Length: 288
Ligand SMILES: NC(=O)c1ccc[n+]([C@@H]2O[C@H](COP(=O)([O-])OP(=O)(O)OC[C@H]3O[C@@H](n4cnc5c(N)ncnc54)[C@H](OP(=O)(O)O)[C@@H]3O)[C@@H](O)[C@H]2O)c1
Image 1 (spheres, rainbow, N blue to C red):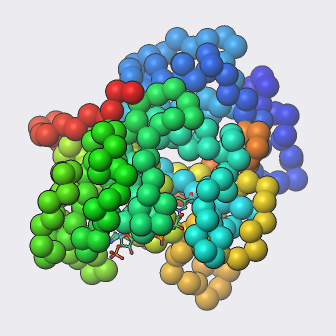
Image 2: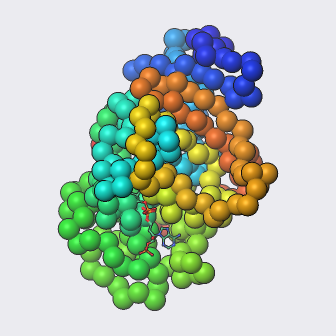
């Protein structure tokens, strides 16, 4: 493939690519996202960028992407919680491209408490996804920006044994199962609303719940060249005793400029069911 082999290293089992997103390539990916049947492609599209983003843009079947932006030593913030600008300019653009290509973005309430994010698409052109906050125990701060910013629709997921709250956003109550809400129940609830391509953006506990339920198809780890030294990690899975038990996904590595993206295939074939054709209450992502 032209223009993508610049970093190929035959000693390593990962395929490595140099991705240089262009306006034409991004416009093409957005066209695919709007119309999955779209096949014509610009002759000078950046092949590596297509490789990275086309699986998200083509919405043939349900897809769950988890993404972490972290330092070289796997941190996502300082111990005091400063999480601003861990990712470089291109890492942020990458995250916003992922948001623009999915139907919905999920965060845990811990991320809202820590960062008060808007979860909108700003660094690139594109529509903002529906926002979903997992707030099992009803502790979403009433002054959270996303409750009043007039952005894309917001769904707050709560356990059904917690008193309903009047948040000015749609609150969906799901059965409490085991440690809280089961990620499959969350995906089913979103699929009923026509939301089937999902970005699980964090934090560590939320991503872990989806990975441990074996519901993450792809994991993007965007590594920025800084060493924070201590502080929270991007993913907190249940400890394993032996390295033989560690997950070793097939990966492709993309140099996107200021950051390096590890694109990990956590599940090669999806076993999730397609959403029902009778899906009601279709909740569309924000158009801008
Ligand atoms: N760099 C990045 O890519 C990135 C992205 C996002 C966030 N972050 C960082 O991550 C940190 C926050 O992460 P975190 O792990 O502390 O919190 P989190 O994952 O954002 O939220 C965890 C909380 O959400 C609720 N929750 C999530 N999944 C649930 C489930 N399946 N069932 C029931 N409840 C569920 C629980 O709330 P309850 O405790 O109320 O039960 C849980 O404690 C912040 O420092 C933030 O800056 C980094």
